[in-house]
Length: 446
Image 1 (cartoon, helix red, strand yellow):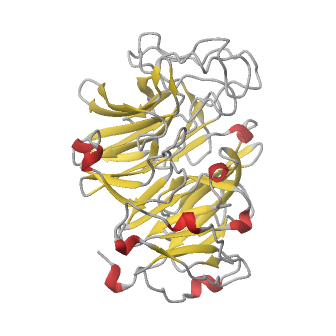
Image 2: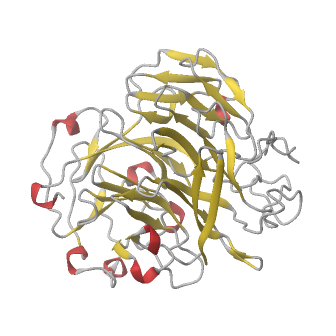
């Protein structure tokens, strides 16, 4: 059934008339139902045989299903999927239907990151260690990360062995890009929430994971020291680059713009006496010399649109979704602009205002898929979707899953399904959901 959120949810003062919210019921094709908000002009989409498959539910804009029984599916690429159980890692070559490749790995329950490269290499990490397999999990080897100068980057000795920190855990789900004909891997760690305090870093590899180095190391944040607790605090071991005055709690997103051959990153979370923790950075990579040049292009308060995530580049434009919180008023929405105008809010176009916090979004084949942060939203498991690059929008509450925050959106697999983490609260691992967009009506396509 549809969730009614009250008249305040119908106010979108910054939106154009075609984006005003209207309400209607959405009927699922299975016993599972989804509440939704439909933007007028989106039109009703036709039924499809996919929705009759066991375990598949349907909204007007997409089908959705939980992952099948078996390993926890942590990432996917084309027809491949990487998964794990408590003590083993697995590789599927048919989108998780079967798992012919596996490797005993006693620390698998603590995996926090994985990525499949186009040559088949798998990078995966536990809380503080990074691994690489080049032979479909016949074997794997630990990768020693290097700092920007090429020296070994060794994780700190934690005050609490049960909280060594999430050194490699990302919030976003796309980490590989073709940069001038070379596949680049780049990601930042979303940390200092669970698992112990760690430094905030952007990591990269330009050689299929043989070498993984730090592209950018943030400074020592006095509010996230290692004191043995899950999220750190104002006492304990200082962590980070002592020579960098730019501090943050963690990294929300790293993305690549092929039109500029440049990488962008955004961070969180707060405003402190030492300054802002919400930054946007632009970085360029000098492949010939294996060097990076980074510039902070804007820093702002936590209630601004720059506390954000879900950065995507399409046709030279940058898209993102705001995670603004803190003191009112909150400057939230899904935005688009030219990259050169990121620091100029007057040049931004707000495509949609979901009204609640979000830091996750993916754009592929004209589909924009974003989500709600469950602890700050009346939606239990909220999704935001456009099938036509932002011309029309809908929001859905898949409340049969309980209070979940969808994040780590992977690009569609070879069967057309996005993979999404459902996290309990904000960041605790729970379930894996697959979403397959429907086609927009012919009149709404661009």
